[in-house]
Image (cartoon, rainbow, N blue to C red):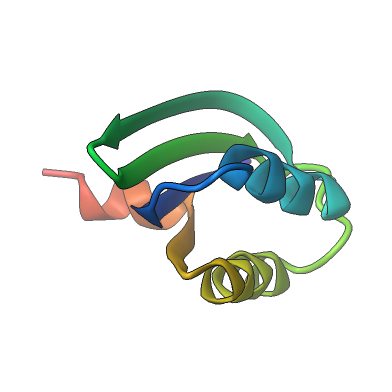
Length: 89
């Protein structure tokens, strides 16, 4: 199982490290990362393997969101099933 984690906000040192550390705490393996910085705006999308999570997905998602609030970013974690359903024609 996989999830999509998105991060948006003002660029600062350590965003990738902090978000990936939070993933590691929950035993979520980062599979792919794409990120861009446009002037001072940071945007990142991570594909994360959640098959080995050591918590419920809702707790993982809440943890990502809370981390975003602490850093002044918007961080969301969406389960691949929801993502796929949203983009099914």
